[in-house]
Amino acid sequence: MTTESVDHSDTTTRPSLNLLLPGFDGHKATPADSVAGSEIVFTNSYGSRVSHRFEATAVEWRYDPGAGDPHPVASGRSDYEAFDVAPGLVYAQFHHRRDVPNTAVSLVVDHDSGHTLAIVSTIGEPSAGRTRVRHNVLPGVIEGREPDRPGPAPTTALVGRRLRWSFSDVHRYEHIHLEPHSYTWHCVAGPEAGLADTVECTTYRLRPGIHVLASREKVNPWASVTVTDLRDHTSLRAHGAVFGLDETGELPTHLTFGAVGEYIGPPARTGSASA
Image 1 (tube, rainbow, N blue to C red):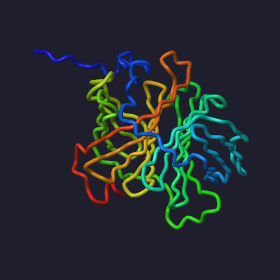
Image 2 (image 1 turned 45 degrees about the vertical axis):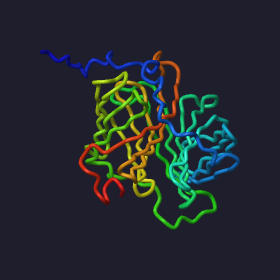
Image 3 (image 1 turned 90 degrees about the horizontal axis):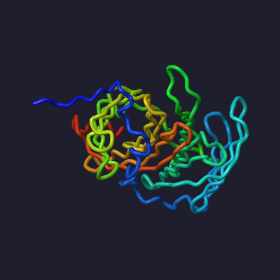
Image 4 (image 1 turned 30 degrees about the vertical axis):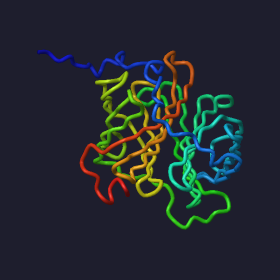
């Protein structure tokens, strides 16, 4: 009996977005209305002032750079989706489709601590040795708040974890975290079944057991930002977005998703993934 092998170096085996993404949001949580009708203003790590005025499905935003911030003054209006990760912890995602189509934002707001974390995903020009989609991670503090606890920070809590995520009844992946700045994904079911890769990532701790993982694909011009809730070791949950170019290589594409997960190994350790 022969077993068909997969040539992982043959990038033509990778499905395009139009084949991969239909149904990928099957386990997405119901969007929340917890930020609708509110204005959230924060100062990021550049000292820049950023404001978001949330309506029911759209957000008016403005960016006023601080001294030394190379980003210009910018403003616009974007459609958004928000998800309640935990009491007082909200994850909002939006693509600046009308104003800055090469940019999408994932914004985490912790009303309890007063901290924020913005992950800005940007599609750049092709460059040898660089991923096409890049991330800029910017911690911040809500205006008028004096945080009484540490804010989001880089973490190694996922290192050594092997997790299985179901994004729908069709799309299932294993994630193996071997070191702080990369992880390996392996598709066990769906359009990419049998394919695997090791990709660059950035991981921040938001709260004990809750992390944000920003990953950047090497083969396809896509990146994702995922908030993983690992507090309940018997019922893992994730919320996220994938952003990149469509199958033509021309059109920026943004999709929100969700996932339910389980530990594959080693057994969850107190003070590890929950750190």
